Image (cartoon, rainbow, N blue to C red):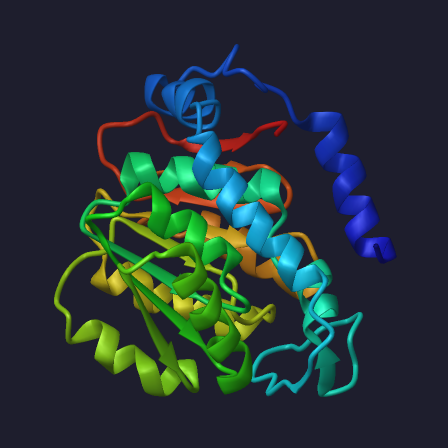
Length: 262
């Protein structure tokens, strides 16, 4: 954890509250924090995904990784062990469960993900809404192929992987002409690309769309991007749980930014 991230975490630790929703004046956000965040997850699904994670952590294959985004601060070489990617890049189980719960509550018929990696987050998103179409975009062919292996092993069939540069893939997503219920942005940890992906998502969304942004305090750039996004006039409310930021477009809810201990 670098100095900037540590400072952000200290501020979060001091000012975060409402772990169980107490003191939140927005009925809608109160329900999200107290019920959606804390909803019971199917233990069999969690066990299946986490067992696949264990296999990935034990996978000593070395693959060449094409980093189209900011790249990994911990993995500099383009040749990486699958096990290292699983440990460093995959979303932790705690947040996978949160994605599952958010998907179950808000996923609707279409879920969009920026950044598949090895597919752990994708499996959590897709398992919660088996009747939804889950479109996930990944910049690296080799990691997307391993993600496909994981989806097959988990017997999850409602995932479509698009591989390539996101800018080139976005027209295909737009052509679907379906507002996403849930969007998870975890593909490029830099300010300008994140703002671009948010703008694209806002353009194709409706008021029921929920956006989750990963690693919002991982760097100065990400901090700046998060501040700009949460103040966008189209956003009515946001929730900051330090690792992730959650954004709502809904009208009729009490506006504000809620820093929540998770």
